Image 1 (cartoon, rainbow, N blue to C red):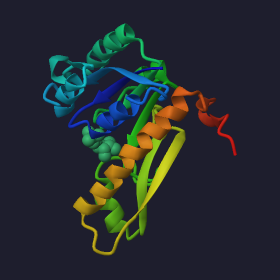
Image 2 (image 1 turned 45 degrees about the horizontal axis):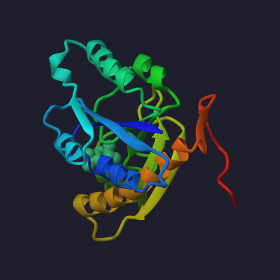
Image 3 (image 1 turned 90 degrees about the vertical axis):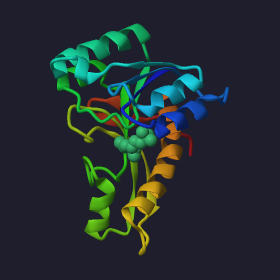
Image 4 (image 1 turned 180 degrees about the vertical axis):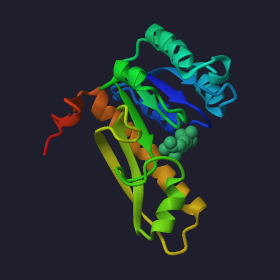
Length: 203
Ligand code: GRF
């Protein structure tokens, strides 16, 4: 399956997906990386792996609609089967999301539906919860609200700071995202009627 990855920053989740795709048995290949930030470090990383990496800077466009039209033009050219958002930090319009619904997935650093939005790690620490984690989900118009594909759980340790907790969850993200993309690329996790349908998972 052809995969496009959308980033805004360093792209460590993108890199985890690129590494997973190097296994010939993996059912997907990253064909392009796009960024809404022209200075995203992940663009260079993608190029160093021989992957086409294109900035589509939001500041070059007067409105969200105009930026999304430019993004859509790139994506239509690339013709991906799956779009992976990997630290893509701009909200998308319902219109844009609707065009790719069921084919666009995102990773979020919390156990959704808890802690949607920014600064999840600090808010988890503040909450007193002893577990935390990450979620890969299909993207819908509701931010961090689409059907959940897979989750990973991490402990919150007594001496955790935002930094140590962030690092623990991030390394779990790097393991979870390739597993979740595999499920989607193989058609084993599909979005149907706004929910998730699994098939062929075995016992
Ligand atoms: C990750 O924690 C991701 O879940 C969140 O932003 C971070 C991006 O990191 N949405 P990276 O760019 O993948 O390194």
